[in-house]
Length: 218
Image (cartoon, rainbow, N blue to C red; front, side, top):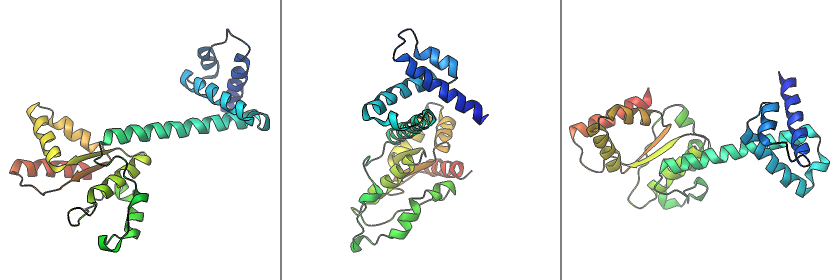
């Protein structure tokens, strides 16, 4: 199986090299002959041009070149996924980064604990994280930094204020999409609720929150 894949890689590189002088050879034909997607072949062709300009092609074997192309593609795919997840997360502080957290004495931050949270094990273990402090101490920034960190490690994230989340529940229920909205939340690895329980809630609001917490824990 691995041998067959290596042969297809060699054939793809051979055909991409041939295409430079064969105007009739298309990316689609190369994809059909090698079993790789057309999108993948086009990406490799673009990266080959960059490697040719930098002189890398002369110092690598054909398989090394293709392995590097595949590595480039994997990194690009991960970066695209990260950017897509960050956009969907709708974070209050979209540029928040754990590297920018200020560990000044007045904030009483536990650096070791934040380093542990950066591993995202709390997500894997379905654990809740409560961030508490006085107003203006950076709770939202830290929560968003954890959210961005999760996105960068390929976890889906969604940010709400408490008011926004409850309003989304009410709208979903009014449109008879309550179960669908709950399912969307359940399929999100990390949900950030800002200003949690800082406003009065109704019995129905409590039920919304309970259902959400139960779904996340299951």
